[in-house]
Length: 169
Picture: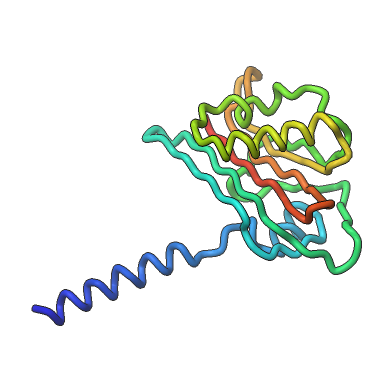
């Protein structure tokens, strides 16, 4: 009986390791190069917040530290669609102050109680309003009203960090 329990424990441990060990696109150099069109080499996630509801709504906020092989290069033809956002609209890379912050309402009005996440979101909002930081986003707006999905990326080249935010309503 103890042998069966040990095998079960090892199986569970293997499954958890497999699930947690899978690479997220935010840590994939190919994702940044081939999908987002930037020459970032991601190093590690320095902050991660995730919240999901029973109705498949959710919010994920990750900050990824990166290195560069040389100076930051952003291809103006990017980002391009990827599987999860294949039918979504795209706001290409820009470093101008955001003109209509309401486009990003699914990020900034999502009901988050976590104080650290809120503080970091406010920092991102300040960078967007200030300008000088490259950002792009994918958005889902099926009926022409409010956006109900956002995949957002902001590059803070001064601190070598990318802010990756995903919101679904």
